[in-house]
Image 1: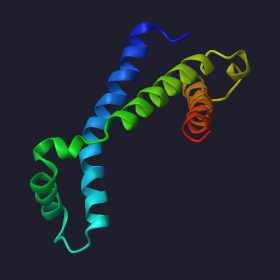
Image 2: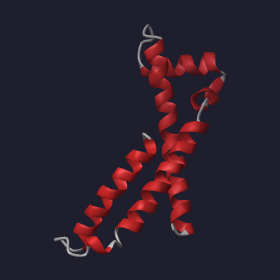
Image 3: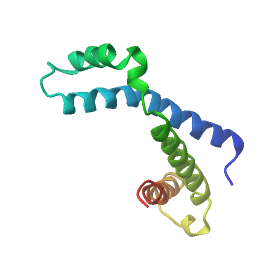
Image 4: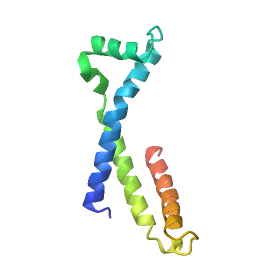
Length: 116
């Protein structure tokens, strides 16, 4: 089981990455649906004007934030659990080798969670 402080870290990391990335994704989608706009700055200003201010950048942020929290929790938990598996004890490279193997397991688990 994931310790509470690591779960809190996974939650914070998921929230922070979504809060930073979602406005940029909103600009990208706005540019894709309105190709006549002059670029990202034009798309951002159009989004602010037509979408109701700065809150337009965060419209629909709930589902991606929930997804990021779940994915980060799965990633942190699977990495933490896999690095202590007895099967990884004989891996060359010592701790770095175990971290690499645990990272591979964590990546697989995260991929399964993100694309069921």
